[in-house]
Length: 467
Image (cartoon, rainbow, N blue to C red):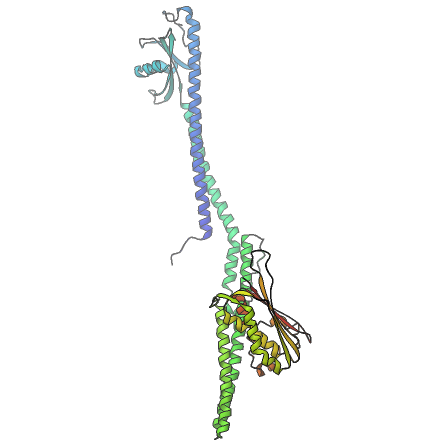
């Protein structure tokens, strides 16, 4: 498998990469903005200097301006380089760096046409200067042209200094950010490493172990607590699986032992036809018990696999409950019990009629079997909904039996759990009835609850979504 970079390294690289893009973009924008601002300031200063020189020429030439009168000392007193050019293109007077710069007739014509023009020139010593040419007009005619200039040394030096600062600052900032990013990523991911280390030490044999990391209530802390909660569920599931396997093996071994014993005793010596018939009937009873047990186990296994309800259709629980009570009425009468049934005209839900029939048949049959005297009442209620939301249907099975102790109530829906193990086996029970009922009702989106008091009876309530 191809080895990938660790999350710590990737986080650091992403951090440095994004910061590098931000810093480079900021540096380029800063350099471009400062460069534009410096050149704009220089050009504006040249325009101001040209205007000042123009005013000086007008003041010194006086009324003779344009008629041949020009200041002879122009521009010796200026603190900037300037020169005066007559209409024929000859230098009248010059000072500073423009003294040795030849006339550019093309630039001069452009300045006269545009009433002022800027250009950059290269001097003999390879220095660059910025030049502004301003034509002097009288009655719409160009009399003279003033050119002022400044070296770009200061501007370029400022830009070079800024570039040097950025070239040093950006890598230094990235290096510091890389160290800080690695440190932060390491501190942030250290709990993840602890979780990984602890998780590797947990196996099927020691699911009782937990991370138990003292972490704040952040994303990593929530992850650790979620992992511990998952281990709780896994441990409970493994315990249920082990217990289920042990109980199933015990339940299967009992009828197989009875079958083998009967066969062994029968084959031990010759017996009469009647004795063989009795032995075969006993074997048949145990085989029937095995068949019911394996069928129940298969149903629970499918429920564990979260298989959907096989047949989903609209059904009415009222006739189903009435039919079950009619079928079980002889059993109730044989036990001197009154079996009462009440239901509305219709109590419609959606589900598998065969599975729901099995649930209610088993629940009512158990109530009859374990009630020595009194009555068993089955009632179905369906309250009309005040809104468009479907109203629930409640099926209550109430008996006057011996009741169930409070310590047994939380375990009633556990597989193979028996309140009275000996009596349950004698009556053919396997301890799976309530577990199966719970699985079927849950698969139909309902709930099943048991309330009971010793010597006062038991009530089982099943709630299903109505239509």
